[in-house]
Image 1 (cartoon, helix red, strand yellow):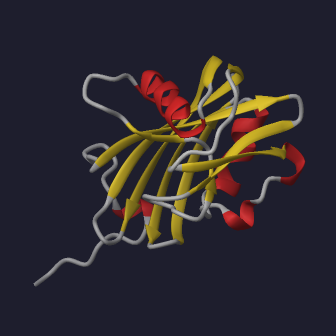
Image 2: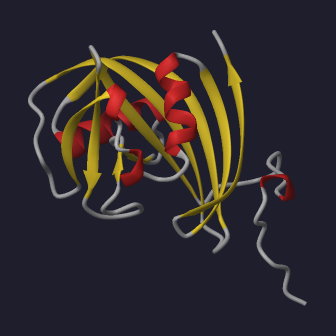
Amino acid sequence: MHESPARRVDAIDWKTWTPVDRATLLFVIRDDEILLIRKKRGLGAGKINGPGGRLEEGETPEQAAIREVTEEVGVRPHTIAPSGELRFQFVDGYSIHVWVFTAGGFEGTLIETDEAIPMWHPVAAIPYDEMWADDRIWVPVMLRGDRFTGRFVFEKDALLDHAMDVTTP
């Protein structure tokens, strides 16, 4: 008998959970604006998200976040701070562990690449309707400066269940 995939957060043993991929997101925040991208390819193509991507062998999450921002939008972020961690389980079996960072600034000039179109958005008008469903849950926590750990279950683009732990520094 084939076991059906977990569709609820509490049906997953997160202590032994091992992701297929490990990745990062890094949000540059200046004044009342946040740097977002429209992804051109890969997981979430067409959606708006933060710059980021998969870790390469031997990289720390912070090193990967800096490299990915530079590759995707042409700038090197600085004043980087960890914000949280996200664990995503998809019912098709795919899973990904994402480290989230913020940056207070950057060096260089934003460019569009084969991977992403960069765009500044007012923090008060983040286009959540064009983003992954989980973003409206944890991005406000990140913007408040709180630390978080989130666990999410998706079926394709549909968020089925989630749990969040938030710590105020």
